[in-house]
Length: 68
Image 1 (cartoon, rainbow, N blue to C red):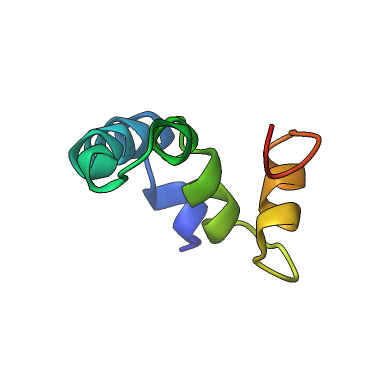
Image 2 (cartoon, helix red, strand yellow):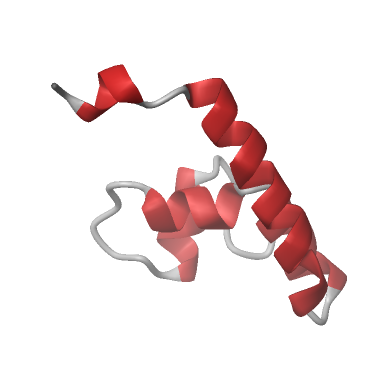
């Protein structure tokens, strides 16, 4: 059986969002906290991106660059 048939996407997102809320306090500055809690950063880390640098993760999240 493929993993796609056994994973509940809605249930996974609830757990994922709860995790993001728990780790938000570990980001000292508000800018990285916003990015992390909006899940863009973590989704980029989990995505099939060749290089996991700030520019590629920002582009994967749909941002112009790492500062945006």
